[in-house]
Image 1: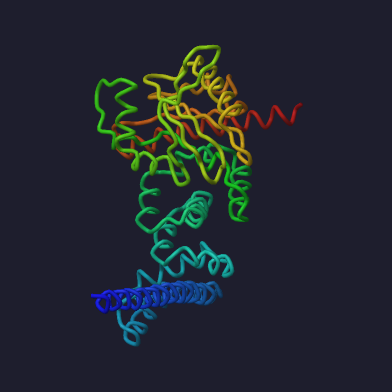
Image 2: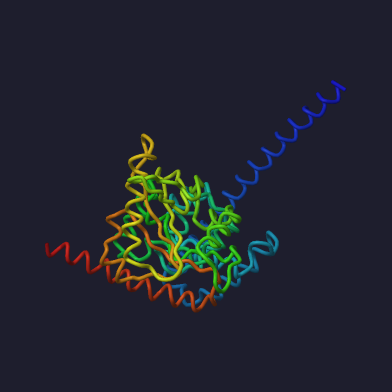
Length: 350
């Protein structure tokens, strides 16, 4: 019996060694392959940009694809894939940046990033992917779910977005604007038609893992219906989370219907109480997130909720057509960017 147990442990240890070695080889092979693809793309681009041969670019790439397939086999050297390599090198022209990104990103990651035309959006996904450790499936879900357009940072002027992304690339503490978004997709809650705030809360707790995934990386559930006694009265916060990277408590209130100005005072009360009685040493001031079925952009701007550490976001329990969602998000982005631009101009005048 004892011998059998030793054999089992020996077998498990050897399996672990083999699995670790295979994982290392696979990782090293992927990095080598990705860098090779970048160098091939860069070499072809240099050749075609020489000027004299640019008009014959299409013929050169097609001929090169045939020659490489004859030498190394079809896989990886199709004309379509060679053109991807060329675009890869054009979009990411710095070899050092590519080499650094390869530590977390595979060639398949880059294949998702390459078609993204907007430079800031592409950089956002690349940096978040490295920071949060997204696998290929997660990255694809984030892009398909229009995470960038929903994240608070996307509504800022280009200069501020670049500054935030630059801070993230340097390993600085993550900004709340990279954490919070709107709208949140709560379709997994299974709620349709009429429902109460309690039904919404119950559904989110029942599907807590999916809710945390939608909130984003770093969120940890602390408590529901957090009791606070203030002036002898009981107050209850719907949901309390902690964000590890922000090092803050996150208070979440769920509201049906449109945002109301009165919600600000309620959330401010909760945040001041949490700051006084719940904040631990080394933590930053708690933040609040008010989830509403519908926002109120002008009220939110006039109340200057950003200065109070409060975010307001919409939620959707049923997902609309993607084209309609994209149109709605782009309209909201334009309004937010105009608002931030007006603020910057007012600050300059002062």
